[in-house]
Length: 514
Image (cartoon, rainbow, N blue to C red; front, side, top):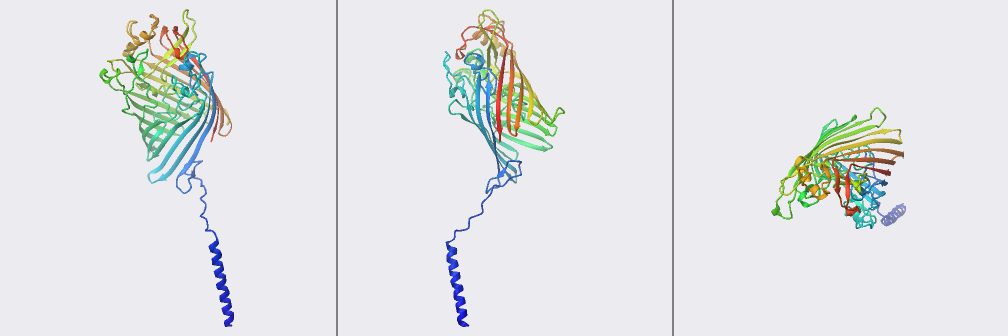
């Protein structure tokens, strides 16, 4: 019996030793894989970044479009080569663009911490950038604004394309810090119902503006935002120094000194939205001449006010919408004639004429913030305007919007005297373009009227094809004739009739959102 017990114990000890040796040879057990989890806190499309409590959402679109009778995708034929309406003008401009946005959110004891980044990668066909004597060259400089301010700087040239940083901001405890849409803007920015970028009648920082903003939420859709935003990117229409030469002088900004200050009250509920916005804008000019000894005008504060209204789900059909807004500015022109609109940097449109002895006709529309000459103070330019649209959904696949805009630009008596002189004598416009007294009415005021129709077809979710046609009328107040040399767009030095101008553009677009 004793022998049997010893044998059993010995065998068990041997088996244990063998098992230990085999276990030592096995690999260490791997850690559990962290699978991506859906984050339902902030809506569809969010998921947790593995190993964190931060939710992230990726989004964007791919857009392919062609605009006709414009060098910019997509605004009108208002200046430089396109305004010339000759062989240097683009009959079409094509662009392909990918947009990528990244939205992250984390719940904290102070509320949600959010970051948002939006960028575009664009490739756009070029514009004329020759030497003004008939040569045609397509170049990156032309499309990036290097030649006559042509194109959008984010569009890139014909070879390498470009990167555009639209939004990059942090939101925390009611604060928004970084590059975001201006708090002054209506929620639809430049687009009450359109794809056209260049509507007047309101501000439109569709690519964001640097800002520091606090927003207080009062409940029931009521909020108040107070903001300081950079004015240099999109809100400087010009402080024109007439002593710098030319009929309308040249913009003469000094260094940055103060941002624009904005307040916005919004009511956003199921029936629609109402918003009231005000902005203060400091015009800080440099010197009258080349040195400090020439002196300078005092700073001049401008301001803007805007009301916006959106009515949703009106009786004409499910999802039908009316968006309207109106604005008034005094020394803060870009809050009406926004940076993508007509008048950005000055409007100069050529057309035909029936006047004997005249080569062609021309229309001017210049809308700076202020104007001054040596020894004088800044004179503010006043404007008012509105824009709006009605969108009707025919069914789940088709909708049409009709839209329009209007703006008026008004100079005070002192500014008109600086430009036009008195009694038909003097003034920078008469001195430069006078054509031996050919100007019979020297008045820099002007109006802009725009009207458009867009139809969209969405055959499957998130894929939309659209056609957008826009008509613009420039109602300028000058009359008579001028001498208007414009060698940069191949226009001869000749007599031109001062006349109202019209232009029509068309945009065809395909866009896939994701």
